[in-house]
Image (cartoon, rainbow, N blue to C red; front, side, top):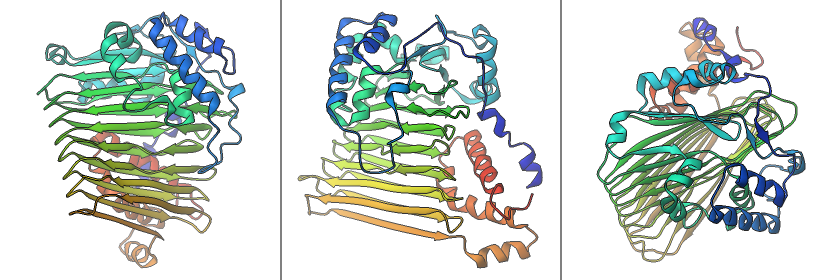
Length: 470
């Protein structure tokens, strides 16, 4: 265990670099801000109209009064758009030294070389790097940033962008996103095409009091498959920043999409996202997420199963330490017969951290033979930490329907701890081993490199507990 701790480099997630930008808006949000963003991107008129419509919706909606406290989030102090570079690089060597060093320390170029089919890097408000292996291009796979997709594939984007999946009217932060979005990924997988290796993008917020609003669209046509990974980091600052992305996933008949997100924002970030999938007949969507950082997180990925036999799986690990309040969960809405979903949420709370699960299961009339199982497990590492579960089930179809919800909250079993320590482990090593077993079902779904890294991050937090053995 001691040798493991030597290679846990916490500093690599706290990379502060000189302020860099070629353009940025003034702090605060006005119609002028939105027009400046659209103009800087040279967007078509239809996208500007959508931005302005979203801005009107944003102004009309109140701030959420449920869940974590958002009272300290001040939109007037946020810089909503920062453009760090004038062009996108297609090789890491083309990036400025300071930006490249940031991604080098995070290991992203190495991951690309070892097991990725395509890679992207978003720095502040813009994607600064992207690549896709030639063999995937020849298969017809599109993997680019969403800004480029607006220019190169306008009809595809018009059809998918904040229409049937995540409309701006969905919630206040979806509307905010629709007004100021920038960057993200656009992925299109042709029919019957299986992408054999993952695609990935990594987001970095390097300045304080900024906003990042990437927009991700994944379209998996009939019979296709893709595995997509997102990672996030930001250095620690005294002033809070805002991350509010939107993810829209379209899983067509017999297609399969796995969306993996590893979030390690600093504890000065408000992480408020809207993520949703529309799943057609016999399609499968998998949501896999590990949430380590941020000051406040509100994240409830949704699966709308609208085709017969559609399936969804939501697997999440949440970690909350001192000063962190995170609320996660899942929404499953079933509109078709013989669809099914599984939700497994694991949370770990230490040093007074607060972790909540807020979920929705809705089975609509006509969804005969549907099945949903929800399980929430919380591990409390000390008496100061808190966990809660708020499920909501609405069952409008009773024929052959099964819906279950299980929840468990508890501390580490002292007998298990004692047993491991009698076998030669110190207290910290024993706790880490128990935690590994607790999160193991979800770790199995992560690419190996990410599972190792997430394990190390959790062990690093455990090592800070009072009484931990160094």
